[in-house]
Image (cartoon, rainbow, N blue to C red):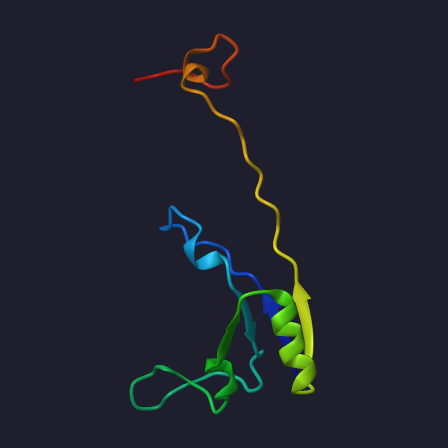
Length: 102
């Protein structure tokens, strides 16, 4: 039996805000291997469940969905963001690590 994964996506490198990281995603693992298509060489698979992603407002809603539909699941908790306090004056500190060049 395949185990569905419930997780909160991380923001992409091009995002400056936290917009697409507020929802929880339920997705299925790949059931069959990916093979190159003979005509164009693109990736092809007979597994259509891999294309389905369900979005929920909370992890509890995703878990309730899995339990209502008798799906095996695992929840991946998001990592906590580490905020580093920065100040403009730190650029000119005497104990600065690294050389200060122009």
